[in-house]
Image (cartoon, rainbow, N blue to C red; front, side):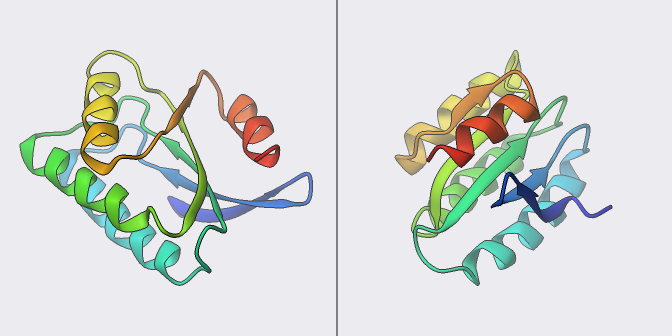
Length: 119
């Protein structure tokens, strides 16, 4: 299973970006793949579900995440995040501030999907 894939949920396309439990170097590869997929979509059309559960990060990842989220902003209609606990929550807040984007937190992928299809 790919870590970047479109899912269909109740007739809506949602792009799952799964960073869960990845080491820092793997995060960069998934980010690169997701960026390519997202940038090929029409502006304001993508619903993203990003899972950062137990994602590992360092300063390089934090900087790359800020650039990644800013780059994706024109294409993303709504973004949901799962797994923003502890340090991941702190990183998420920093990325939001730097990119001027709001990423809504959820406790589960199911809850995130329900919210996304309402957007």
